[in-house]
Length: 139
Image (cartoon, rainbow, N blue to C red; front, side, top):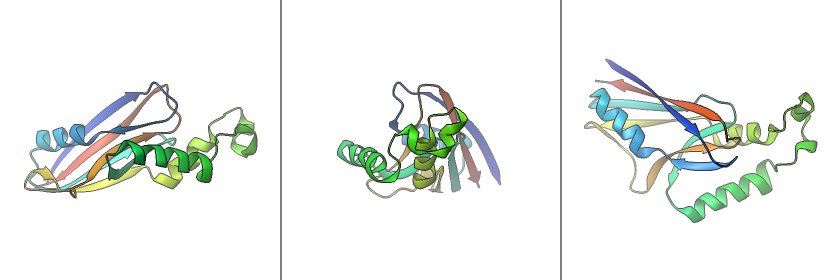
């Protein structure tokens, strides 16, 4: 079995951003030379996420609004975690809700995604250097 590891670095301009990383992941699948297998894409920070969904800006706005209005409002005074001197408890809760990783199948040397599916990095506490791991495994 082949194995290939690559780290992708981010330094977002805003505290929260959604970034389409599908092409970067596809490049690593090609570099690995895997024809049949899977790729794990995992955020290496506890205030970020990786997920698969549609590449549509209205949906991104809906996701951000849902996280703010329903899941974890950015209100530092409401969270016990922030009593430690942090102000990012909402980002931790958003990461738990959205998830920190995605596993995508590889078939015939390509990502095997549905017609509208893309891979995204969700940053919930950005404006500093962070990374994710792309781990390609297969034959």
